[in-house]
Length: 350
Image: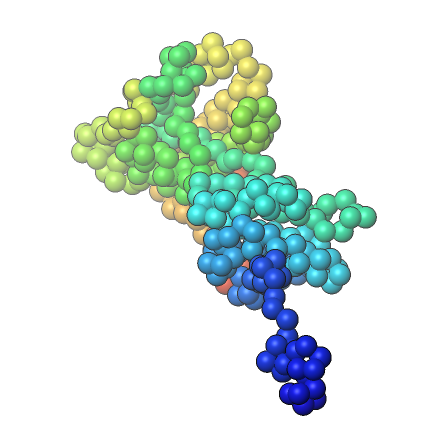
């Protein structure tokens, strides 16, 4: 078309494209997709969005983010995707209202981080896992190598402190921490003692209606004093105790019968059973043989600290000859095999 012809029609070639309205320009600015580096596609046909890998124009603008998320959800639904996860830090918390408006809900949270999820197939019940359901606690049974008394503590605060209750040193595992390592660490923190993990004696599960709503798994672990304390005893030195100043009012070696005879324990069928298991373990090996008791490898039949003998009047006597129950769960840390890394397995020796 000639310029004249264009002008005759009331326009020119330079004006062929009409100017965009403000709303149209705003929509184009908002139509930003998530970069691939912020997305992870899992083997369950799900997608995880890492908000920390989003550009500022998305992570810093709730309107832009919700536009990109809405378009992505439509696309993923058409592709047959199922579970959608969004992981973010508190830096991106201003995005949360927009995310929940699109049907996402909280899966779990921890200091500085939160995860939200949405199940896409409307015709199916969600298969997404719940958030963490349990916390893991440990209790430590340590026996004096000469007297056979157990190590007990009184706490400065909490329910046990209100009752002046003697209890074993206890605590919670840290994220990524094995039960065996947690038991050794907690004992060190509360009493200053260096110990070696021997085995799990027993464990109990409890369901709480408290504010955390987490169930609790509590593992009673038998620990063995480091050999250096035996050397000190041979020199006439007592095993030194250093109660944790912030938490522990007193630490002492007490008779197991005195421990089990406290009113709180005697009134509880659960703890009577637990204390009975502890006494059985103690009677099976109050005085350990010199055999090493370490976390072992798969080809070591004695690994994990199974007490096979005790010292009586200076003589080594097999526990089998005494009818002693020396069972429990011993630890073995082994390679996973199909991927890098190791896991710890606790094997029953009952």
